[in-house]
Image (cartoon, rainbow, N blue to C red; front, side, top):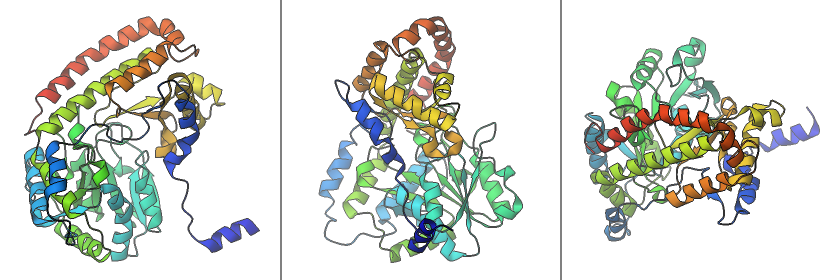
Length: 432
């Protein structure tokens, strides 16, 4: 061991660079455009929350006292009612608990579960996924087993060897997936978890934005035993700044985690819990948000295809998972991870748009970039205008001329799918 390695070992854990901090240089490049940068890198909502949410934040009268760590009775009951309406499942409100935004729950769950059984030292997660699953495992001192998606989409748990599943403290699922937009068969995953004695945690914060199925899915549709569904109000209700979510499912798991979290002082502020009740009571604003995101996805998909990229609409979520084209891979010397950064830099230079290279979500995502449909329509149109004026040999105006006929065919092939998706947004199955 070198002296530098010995010094690092003696220091213990050092936080790695935050994934999105790596985009700072590209953000500077994109910001040079007149009109500034169009930030499509992070899934931060740009739309306002419902007015009832804002009213509840200011009028709850709950500012003086400490809030309940597990969540107020009103919030837990309303979360259970919402799950019943949206997913047609019966959830006991006693098995629902609040969390301070779902990111902190994702980051801490493996740590808390390992305290329950220190002999288990492994977290199973998708190979391409939200980075916090892996960071949560690292904070817990666990190994991460990254599992590829199956051909049908979703994590292929059948490929996990028995010797690894025997050491697993938990499995993370994410459907619809961030970043790929694919859907997982949650019933199959729940069955696997029960057969192997591994708790299955299903991150369902994009469930309201399911496009390719008539009804969104929850792991609780397979029953609550051994599973926990995790939900956020950040996406469905544009409440990312309030930091509130909840988890529900197996009585023993929810009870253990909520008790430990109470000792740790993890509490959603009382006014925020009141706002969550207001958001969960109202389904109409979610329908409107679905329509906004589908429109933005379709427009971005069209603009990127016209600009020379092979974009496709996702099965769920509000991200486009765009393959790195050959010219970007070639420019990077056939290093696909670098190819994603080549493409991201080209988009920043030509269109003033910031996107996320796929390797931020795991090495298996290195051949893609993620594009978030989270800017107002006029900002998305600005991306199209800039691309149309671009002299880049592979992106924008020049590329459009060469690909015009192919793009026409591609748009025609997608029109039927768009019509079907639009019909589902207007008339989704289940109450909305």
